[in-house]
Length: 364
Image 1 (tube, rainbow, N blue to C red):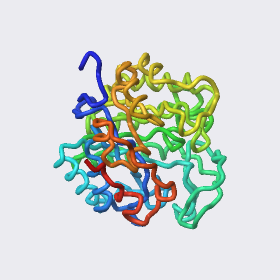
Image 2: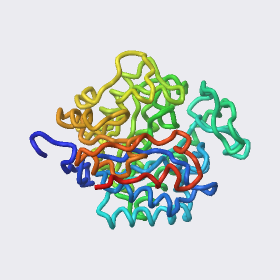
Image 3: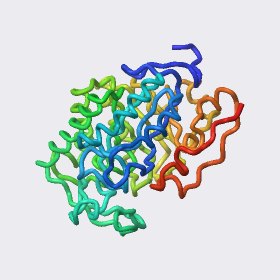
Image 4: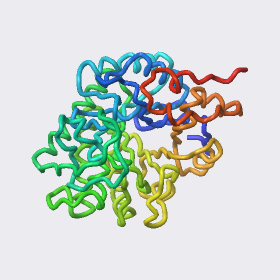
């Protein structure tokens, strides 16, 4: 490792060698169609951004029960896995590294995704939000069904099977989405986990579900090819717990023993802050773990360089700047200006290339 690491220096994330410290953040873009099968347009989107040291795919559901976003991709059928194969192959042909983010929406879903059955969650606590986008249009959030204890091993198995599919088609690793108010984050946080069994009631018990998922995925692909995403400061999807510092400090400490490829920490506040205390920083996590750290949320080239140079982060993930700048790495390297931000209306639009793969690269 260089004495003063820079944003464009290579790094080793567990078993994954990356060519620079820039990651493409996972961003749901809703281009997979109603069947949730990844397609050639999505492959083009990722290969346009292959200069990133690490590509983290958009959140990809592990089962039909996990669904909760219109036209997002899945990985729970052979057809879905086959649809991803072309992306993995194309990224590798261009010397890129790509990991699959594994997702269960939990209570941030709606019964219309599940044939009228309620979404599931650790506890029957409704998300306090304005509405959810569903196959029926905008709908109010509903009270989820609390998962029974005997159902949880099946969900862990779903993560393991999804990891096997990812491994079989050649992904360099997987990232477990345990952030932003989705199922595994709901298990971690006291605001959403009021269980009285072995998966709730204490900081240690609330970690159990994530721990079992990590162990199950690591068994398939190796812990050094598994990353975990956390959002200790986040308010998205009505999150934020009074004991967040104790909970996420414990999580980071316990995950350190697995020998993971990385922890992906949403330390930036651009996605919203619950304001229940001082935000947890990358420096805080650096003291808690020896696992490589990826910072994310609201970073610029300058703040990313500061985080890398200061030793607080090993990589920085960029989201919105990568949407409208497929050649973001080259722009950073050459000091070229960035394109204007993409129109929010195009972020999740299932209209194909518009606002997805039609952004210009810099003209030399």
